[in-house]
Length: 111
Image 1 (cartoon, rainbow, N blue to C red):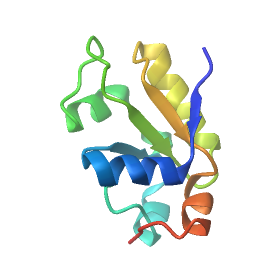
Image 2: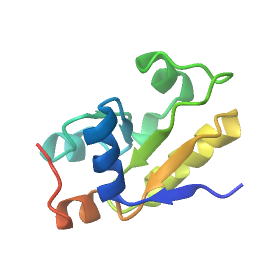
Image 3: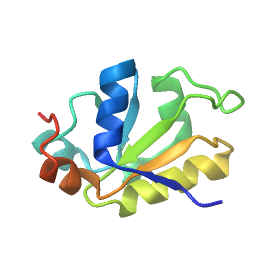
């Protein structure tokens, strides 16, 4: 099954309206500490574990109604992380199109 893409602006709009967006940044720690989305949590792809993400957000593979958005620098690593999640049985996964490069180009909130 293909991973759905979502634009950074759509993720930000979702955050502004709902406030409880799950945004998983799979870049390495040094990249994440340089610049990141204020409400993202860092789970580097190099050490990525589905259970770590599930525990951090108190989610369950059997109850995947909450969408999870994955972001990296340009979209490749986040695509891979979303695939790993989907293969584990979690359906509602999205890849943030263009990653942080597009996020920054769109002048969205960062820190």
